[in-house]
Image 1 (spheres, helix red, strand yellow):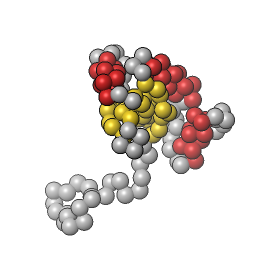
Image 2 (cartoon, rainbow, N blue to C red):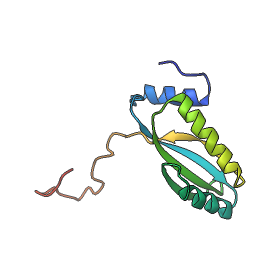
Image 3 (cartoon, rainbow, N blue to C red):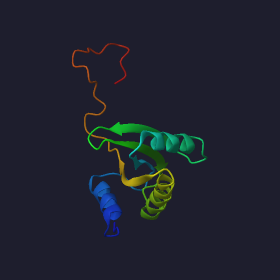
Image 4 (cartoon, rainbow, N blue to C red):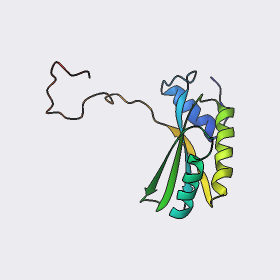
Length: 128
């Protein structure tokens, strides 16, 4: 599979190289960053009240001391669709004195389904 030679194309190529099936929709997380909590909260509220699909989460990044609004959209991981969505969200973030800061996908890792409690003993009711 060929991808454009830019950050977005490289991310899609890395996803394909990692074995992700790019022919199926994925939950793609778009990151919007704000200096001020008030701006981030207003952007979040307006986004929730809009007709845009997806889930949103607001976090404070202690390392960067910035507010991150994560917009997770279930969509096909197609280059043009990602570029369009990222551009729309960048314009949206600018309205609230924020910026877009890329996108990513949570990849299933080996062991994600394992029970975290090592002392747990499976019984008849366990389904994992």
